Structures are given as C-alpha cells and as structure tokens.
Length: 526
Image: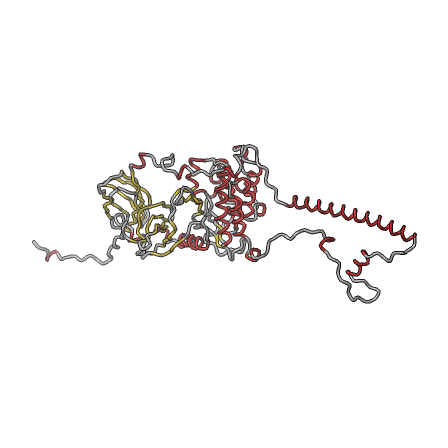
C-alpha cells in the first residue's frame, strides 16, 4: 500500500488500479486487503508485505515464492494469483481472487468432529488441489486447517481451496519427487506449523517431497474425524518428539463409529517413513473413496488423471479380452518347408487330420473305436474349455478392486449423504460476531519503524505493527504515533469501519557536528 493507503485514503489506488476497501486479515509478514479493480469492477484480495519484512531478503523471497508457486497451479481448489507488483516504497504485493467464506480452522472450532462423509469429502477436495500442485512440481509444506478455505459460491454451495504457498517447495520438472531447487529457508530453521509437519520435515525442511503433504493431510483428516490432533498435547518440544518417535493416538478409541479401514488409511498417511505412506494423493483418494459422498468416484478419477504421466494419458487403456489360446489360434496354412520337416501349420493339420481309413471289417471296428475316442476327446476338450472359462471368471473377480467393507455404524449409503453448509458459513449462527464485538472497530497499524507507540490523547492504546480496538462511532478521533529517533505524527480517523493504517514516520535529522558559533560579549546588546 505504501503512500497509497493511509488512514483516510481508502479511496486512493494501489498501483493506479486497485481501490482498497478494508482489511481481510494480517500476519507477521503482511496484511491482506479487500480491493476492487476500478477498470474491471472486479473484487480482489491484495496481500501486501510489511515494510520491515520487505527489508529482509529471506522474508521477501518467501513472499514472492507464494506468487510463483500458485501461478504454476491451475485448479479450482487452489486460490488463483492475478497479478504481482512492487510499490514505490519497495514493498511487494500479490493480487489474488477474492474469496468469501471461512477457513477450516474456524469450522473445526464450532462443528468438530465432523461426520465421516463430510470429513472425507473435504479431504478429497484438498487431494484435488494438492494433485494439481504436485503435478506442477510444487510441494505445499504448510498444509493445515487455517490454509484450507471454504469459499462460498454464488449458490448455497462452497468449494475448498488450498491457500498460502509461502513456504512451498518448487521441484525441477513436474513429477515429484525430483531434485529440489534451492530452498528459501536457512539451514536449521523450521518454517511451517510443527503440529502438521512430517518427521522428515522437522529434521530438514528442504529435503521433503509430496509425501510430506500426504502426512499433513493425514493430520488434518484425523483432526476432522477425532476433534483433536494425533500427537502430544504438551510443550512444543514434546509435540515434535512425539511426531518423530511415538505412534498417533488411536482414532477409533476417541471416535468408535469411524470404520476400521478408514482409520487404516489415516494411519498410513502418518507412517514415520515416507516410503510407508501412500505414494501419491491419487492413491490416498482411492482409499478414501468408499467413505465419501455421492460423486466421490468422479473426483477420484479426476485426481488420478492430474497425476497420470502424459505418455500414459495418450495410451489406449481399453482392456484386452482374455481368450483361451486354443480358441484364438486358427490353423496356419502349409508352408514350403523342406521335406522331412513340418511347419507349425502342417503340424496342426497332422494332429487333426485322420489317416486313410481301411475298407475291411477290421477297419470298420477301428473307425468305430476312433469315433468313440474322438467323442471322449471332444468331451475332454469341452470340459477343459468350461474349466478354463470358470478359472477366467474367478481370476477376473479376484483382480477386480474390492470395495472396503463399511462399518455397520457408519451413516447411510453415499448416495443419500448431503454435505451440510458449515455453521461458520451461515449468517446468524454461533460463528457470527457477538453484539459486543460489533460495537467496536479494529484499526490495524503497520509502520516503520516497528515498535511505534500509538496514543489516543494521553492514553497508550498499543504498538505498531499491531491491532487496536476502538468504540464504533462517526466522530473523528486523533491518534498520535511516537517512535524514538523519528518525527511524531498525528492523524484523524473516523472509527466507523475496520481500517488498515500504513504510516511511515520520518527520521529526525542527525545532530550537527559543526562547532556552535558564539558572539563576543562586547558585541552583545546592553
């Protein structure tokens, strides 16, 4: 935002085309603003890096990594990046599609644990977003409920979208796992949320592949089903030790109605060794399909196509009919093989062509005996054919994928399952702000330098960067911002809506080192 976003300047533009309307959210590295593209009349969300983070090369690299990673992914289940740029003051911004709704963390605060088909439906949508990312060579590395957004659609439905690829890892090529590019994190530092990080990511965040995302999704699915995390509840050190060392808590012990096969799928996601997990999210989606709602099979098929190599997509995958070899082969014509040898065709003819029949009575008896023998052969061949056909049917049945047996206590069949709209997405529910909260507005102040003190009159109300709350009203209030070594500033604000205030305090001039000029006493006036 820079100079374009001030307390009273919400009608001014970012980059000459985005009119800022208010704040959506904020974090340690940046703030997310609601805006409108003035020429296209299109609502967007703008993520703007804080001034202090823009001066840190690593923070800036992670910020831009999000734009690069998201731009490589084309999926309705990943938030779309529209534009990137840099303001005059050097701060970078990312323009994304504007989403309305709430994240999964908010849903779990009010609706946890979720019904089995609902949790599986959510997991399958996340699988589809991850499949598109992995196909583009991007590993998310920070998948958690706060980064899974339930975006409200024009109708009453909603779509899950994977957000925040700021600590993602871009692989060389499109087939993971491959040799990684240089990571944007320093050795020994952990970026991400430890509760959702795999053991190998805790040891070295740069040496992970797509199976780290499968681990994280396993944790999220466990949390949706059990209403709690699978590992330790103590300190951060205890949590990280449990992830590396201990098995997860029993899912069915806390949620007995979860089918055993579904628990096995979750536990496979949480295998300590990456090679013991599902090889891809397509394999995971296939294991989850029997427990999902109507339409799960279609989604699983799409996920499989996303991760299928191009060479196999073009191949004809129609099954070849299995036919007994003795029915498939016709007698071959006689060849011009040298005398004394038989071609394969001649050999076949020799086997089926009877020799000349004698005309004597003995020959009649011999012919009758031969006819009886041929009938026996035909019966034997017929029996062999029926036996082969029966074996073929048995083999086909055995090779067909078996549906996982559902626990009798699970909800009704998938065709009758309706995914409800979460309470957090419905107005007037428990997730709506309380009356007391609506009587206040939030001012988010970002500033340089950090640590700027904000006063209302003589009262210290907070430090920037940070949030301050004020009583909602239509009368202006005056905030005073003070920082050591900088010129204090004042600004008048109407506390009628939530606002984002970006302030750049000017530095005080350095004290002069020139000697002070003195006036001789005899020249001073009487």
